[in-house]
Image (cartoon, rainbow, N blue to C red; front, side, top):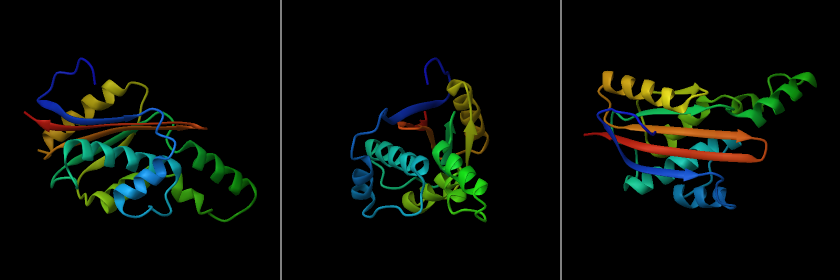
Length: 167
């Protein structure tokens, strides 16, 4: 987020790199229930988004909010597990859904009462991904921009989120 000039300002942020030891239990407490049928990547993303909104004093995402999630690795463990299940001859394994980045967007819609534009980006340069998201949010006249970066690579987990509002 450094060095970006835009009409957006950071109103809150949450960084868990790595997340706390009991982050899943903390997420269940924040949501009032444990999310089901989410892979680690999507659940970690939901944890980061929820803690970022808490830091902003928001219980839900405001109307017309836009969400952009970026990742270099995506849901790597679910993708590898699904590939292994396919090699074993299982028909479209359940893990396939967990390997899809869009499952995080669906979880944000369900748990943060979000309806709006959103997307997932694979990137090597987070600043470039954020500039693209900010430009799209301006064009869409978004009511706020929730930017997330979620990484799951083996046992190394990280989730970073920023809530941006227009000046």
